[in-house]
Structures are given as C-alpha cells and as structure tokens.
Length: 257
Image (cartoon, rainbow, N blue to C red; front, side, top):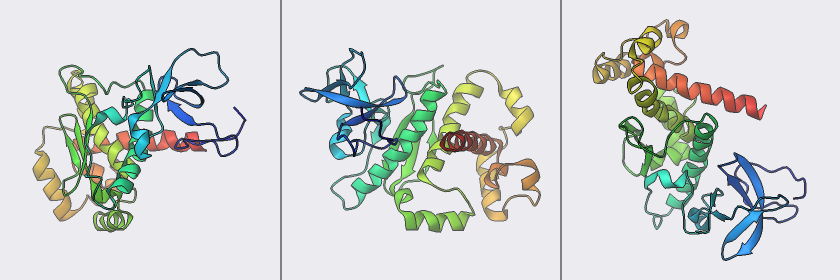
C-alpha cells in the first residue's frame, strides 16, 4: 500500500497503519482493506477474495489469514494445535506467542515445499501439536509435543549447554520433530526404506538402546566426518531428522541473506 518494508510477524504497517496479514494460499504478506464485520480484501489488488484474520489474532499470537467469510476460523497453522497451555497461568501467553512464531516459520517451509500436513496421508494421521507443561519434547505418530519450558530462554540455554546442542531453539525443535513425521510419509509409507538405509543406516536398530548409549557415552570421536551433528550419530532416525532440520535452516538462511 505504501512501499514500506515489512516482516513476517508484522500485523500493522507502522507507516500507513494498514492492517497486514500473511496469506498462506499465496505465500505472501498483504495489506488489508476492511469490509466490516472482521472481513477484508487485499488492498491495492484486483482480488475479489474475502479474507479474515485467524481467530487467534485476538490473542496477538497470529497474523495469518483465512479465505472466506468466517472470522472465527483458525488459520491452517493454528488449526494444527491440539493442546495449548492454560493461558490464565502467568507467562503462558508469552510462551505461546513464542511457540506460534516458531511454528509459523515451520509451516511456511512446509507450504513452500508443497508437503502435506493437514490431512491424513497414506494411512498416517495429520500433523498436530501439543504445547504443554511438564512434557517430554518429541514426536509420536504425527503428534509433536513441545514442553512449555522450551520457550523459557534461561531453561533452554541450560539444556543447550547440558546436551551440547549448539542450535537449540523452538524452531529447531519443531523442524527436527517434523522430520520424524515426514520420515513416516516420505520413507516408510513410500516404501523407500532401502534408499534410506543406504544413506542413513538401518533404522531397525534398537532406538531406545541407541539413545541411552548416546546419552551415557556421547557420540563417536569421528562423528564430524560422518554426521552433521553429534546427536545425528545416535540413530539413523535422528540422523534423518537432524539433516531435515538443517536443510530448512540453510534454505531460510539463504532467503534472509
């Protein structure tokens, strides 16, 4: 509308005061022309679509748009949430906002790469998220669980140093855990296990024993020569997930540059 540079999390232009939103169908940030009743059109374009901000915009945790005349709908990214923390507990709303910022960047990448995530595929469930307290961060059959404390900068840094993980962040966790989900879709469901094993190793090795050994003994001395991170050397599934996450890191870094 005015030529001002804007950013992915912006919800209003500081120059012309237009409301802004991210339109996932177009992978684009757009300025909005109000129509009333919480509905909008794209400002300055010959576009007849009626848009609404995600219902979570009321909590200031989302600036994504939906197409249609229902301002109570959740956007494609927020609709993936199964559980969020109790927002009446002090600090949880701020933590949820940080989680949503990270998750939006993950979902943007999934949309960009045209990866399925919001409907069952090949007998697997859709991608879903639990952002909860006192939980173990991980993935199980399409459900990614993230502990609320991962949004606490002090606790996250303590864990980063304890586990020797140079890139420990909410976005890093989400990208890594999404890799486990897409292993089910792109490798297991597609019958490409042999191709996978040729690159990453045999995933039939005992997973629990492999992780226990890694945490007790650490990575092999030569892990730098064979893996992209120390944790990737723990098991072929972790090698895949770490590689998946690093690819997303590199693509976004190149975009930013």
